[in-house]
Length: 179
Image 1: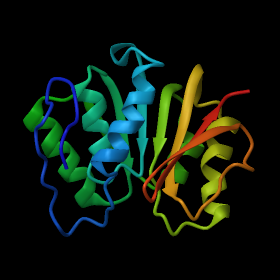
Image 2 (image 1 turned 90 degrees about the vertical axis):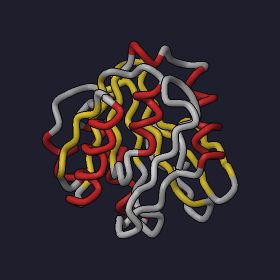
Image 3 (image 1 turned 60 degrees about the horizontal axis):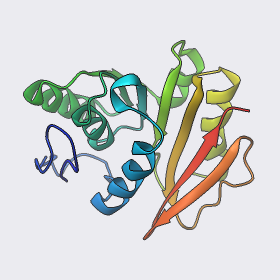
């Protein structure tokens, strides 16, 4: 995986093969950040990266100037890898080892962008818990977005607060906005 833009543009990050992850492809990540680049100044936002895995999305935000990034993952080795990479690159990423759903139930901080990249084999019930917890607990700022990455075989358009989706190959980003 590589960082697409910003301070660390072009830098490759090689995650250990043993991590239980499926990083967002460079093509999909570039398309996502093209959308976000037209909506936000990255140095003015706060980001919550759920199911952070390798930290791929967090690194991209940090490279573009975001200083308030929290990465949440339940896997100890993923958190350890994100911490090491963030330290090596001097990136302002705060990590939390936690089940994402438990984290969302008790979270207090509002964020501009909440990005969730859960396992593609999640049931619709599990997918639906993400926007439900985010919106019920008011975890988004007024101009904020919840973005859920999922496979093209999953349709999240019936969930409350769904706004639109964009497809890139087998990846889909579904965008949700506060009412």
